[in-house]
Length: 213
Ligand SMILES: Nc1nc2c(ncn2[C@@H]2O[C@H](COP(=O)(O)OP(=O)(O)OP(=O)(O)O)[C@@H](O)[C@H]2O)c(=O)[nH]1
Image 1 (cartoon, helix red, strand yellow):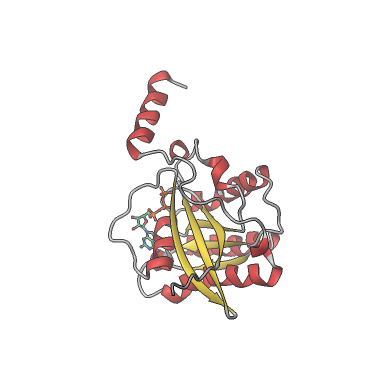
Image 2 (cartoon, protein in one colour; image 1 turned 90 degrees about the horizontal axis):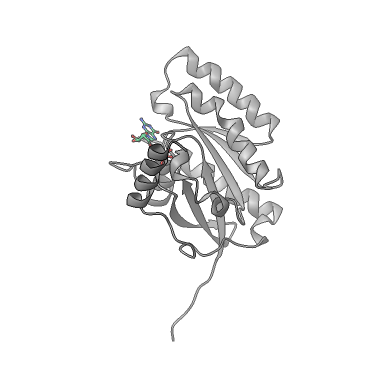
């Protein structure tokens, strides 16, 4: 007889500027590897991993969202629907990606994602952090996380860092279980809406430039 096992699916959106490493982080968590090559995400990519949280199975459905505005525009309302948890990411080597975090938080607020939704702040590319500038933003990032009631993680999607990457997503899974947050309405099934193709997105971008909108 065939057995069906079911487990709850939770939707985790990963937000941040283009190039901060959202694809690499989600790929590392779901496959254990660092991708050999990445391209700018168009619309959204989905990755999933089933984890065990205190004896219960939970499927983390990670929404790796596009950081580039031109690749986000038709998708934004899908990102923010039925979200269980949020990961904000910035790049330790690029202070502008830290300065833009309030913009990402504001976009969440505008889409009615309140502070009851578990969220974490991730500073990625720790393997490249060397200068005193990095440590200054680290201090500011810890303060920002505190103010918003988030945990803060310094990590790298690359190298010898799988435990750090796992810790980010596992902490969210545990938090969701503690708060009963995974009992909220689940995500709409991936693929229930049409994703823009890269060709379409590039054409759209060209048209936008061409008409000067
Ligand atoms: N050294 C190092 N490079 C990284 C790390 N994470 C990502 N990168 C590199 O940073 C670049 C951008 O990574 P992506 O994961 O594609 O960035 P993204 O945030 O998904 O970008 P968009 O899809 O445009 O929003 C790639 O060249 C990666 O190889 C990291 O932890 N360390």
